[in-house]
Image 1 (tube, protein in one colour):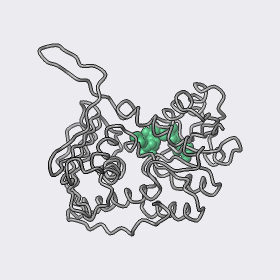
Image 2 (cartoon, helix red, strand yellow):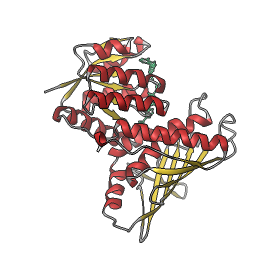
Image 3 (cartoon, protein in one colour):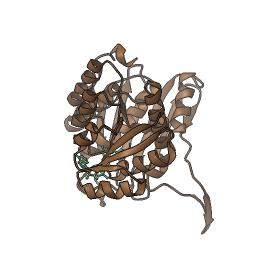
Length: 333
Ligand SMILES: NC(=O)c1ccc[n+]([C@@H]2O[C@H](COP(=O)([O-])OP(=O)(O)OC[C@H]3O[C@@H](n4cnc5c(N)ncnc54)[C@H](O)[C@@H]3O)[C@@H](O)[C@H]2O)c1
């Protein structure tokens, strides 16, 4: 069976997913692309062959030649589009964050539970990165005893000029929050947020530093710095009772010159997490065929957005904020 996929958003992520789905993922065909700017959808469709284009995302969701949907339009569009997919019972892979507020995420969770079927996957692709997977299995089998500290670094070379200090928490650090929840298998109970001074490259926003504690007492710190200039740099180091482990950096080549040995960095996430996106998309398509669910659930989308919101409260108040989360419904076990 071939799953016919419609992609909403033909920007960086939507175009990347559409091209990867049609050229590298087995068991699917991209039949439709929607973008508010239909010319952009047409330009991606031309590269795919014969996908239909739409300027209205709802028309794509309702189209009879679309079995499943990828939502890769801007964050505020996620909530209504995912709800529409749920109304029609169509599986949806929604880019992170699931929605811009925890209240909207919860509406999605409730709609999915009412539908009685797990239809939503959130695009937290770190869960499909071989490095994070290896780190998780070392944690789960207690290879070095219990975890104590998790240090996370998220640096982008450049960010859009309109990016705010708040967005660095809600849109960027949310990746690290989900990765930490995935690795440690538990929720946070409190959060503190500080920021450094702004940099000369981006005087209008502040690099963020979050410090959180999990229910079992692991401390997690997150540096989220989107104007690092030198490249895209994501790191994680976990310190356990009898050992430590960090993500190995992946480099195709090592260069020698001017008295130094160098390893090149990726310019952005599309290169660094290319393998993770591929594995995420293949797992999603396969799960649709098998009737199962993989990756981050709508509940994970809710938990990470709620935690990010409370980190934002901590940033605004400059106080430690308690995180009280309802327990996960059995539907998401
Ligand atoms: N998983 C990741 O690593 C990752 C990385 C970057 C971005 N993202 C997420 O992916 C999403 C898209 O980000 P991007 O960088 O591709 O943005 P982008 O700005 O490059 O592309 C967004 C596209 O959506 C279109 N659009 C806007 N409103 C629309 C609507 N109502 N219906 C249909 N199309 C609409 C725009 O015209 C644009 O072409 C965001 O939610 C972002 O947070 C995820």
